[in-house]
Length: 489
Image 1: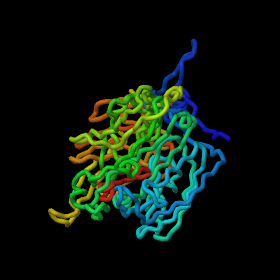
Image 2 (image 1 turned 180 degrees about the vertical axis):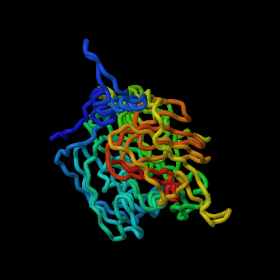
Image 3 (image 1 turned 60 degrees about the vertical axis):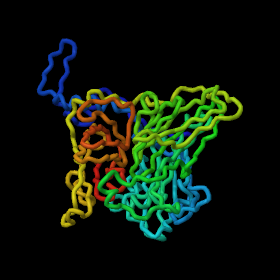
Image 4 (image 1 turned 90 degrees about the vertical axis):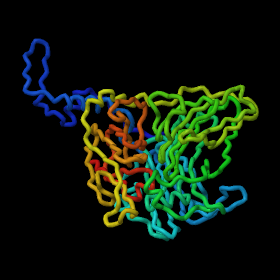
């Protein structure tokens, strides 16, 4: 049985103004025919604009989903193990179910996922499902949504994802260490389009700081990492391999899902001599597809690509490279060989209801997050650094409150000289301006990279109630205090 999706109807602007109580019924009277009208007061330009922006959002994605009744159950264990990242070497890692990346969980939209999780690590841990709109109690943040799971402890995560797309999961306890040791996996929520492709493949991109004997370098949160852009590794892998190759045939149409699970490294991936279209960002379909190669893949970000292998490509190899740094770095390859395939023919999957929000530039900023750093009190010149949001380091924070189902704006002001990919749990948002200049991104996000001394303005309509954290996804920065919370009520 297919899931029943409850869509929010797209009402008129007036309906929304009245229904939300933005303007009381008695404040607006309308002229009809020859009838006299009486105007006692008008809504302010700001209120009217926000009502229009809210109405434009309606139908962009679903408020609720009614489960299909199908429950996908699995056991997951976090434990110490060994994997072969380098040919002929065993590297000690922490893993989910003995593998890195952890299990690639695939469910259909409408399925309920039930994970019986056991912590066999020597530390407390949790699981956070990055980008998934889960019930607040399933979000995996100690001190906010659940108690940490002790060594030997068991916890059951159960939820029905509201959105199809590419998501991932990782600990939210000592994340800068536990993710670096190998604790991450992917969650793919499929829709009908997912099954039309010749292949639907996930590439998990990660970097590792390794010792000469091919082991994880076990000094975490070093002063150098904290003062700069976090822990960047000396080895980059795709699906925990240095030589990941996707075997394809000419004519195949492939959905390739890129996931950045790195602690801190930012990528600017692109293919050499291969046309690829971006169809989804951070799990959500774009309004209109665009060429791949000009979009950062910051920690936490995902990009879904639609690739048709040229019919003349038999025997060719196409390389995915990273161009973010000074040097171009190869990441993985698509190797083409075999009998020519018939190319699946269907329209690019898109979401035409992504709002443009052109008039968002006229809306005032509701909340500002100032991002900076400081030395810990009494630590001295060489003491430990703290990363702050509005001059406070987590767990010291003042939560902002957003009203459920209303148009809101946030500004990230980076007062520091370092990068900060800012991630908001439980909600999607849309970038509307950078350094005060309006931009038109035809997609939603859950993570946005904020460059040094830059401001980034975002807009959102929160549809999931609860207390949700917002933090830098450079995990060392979050560990050192760059985390706060927002309350949706």
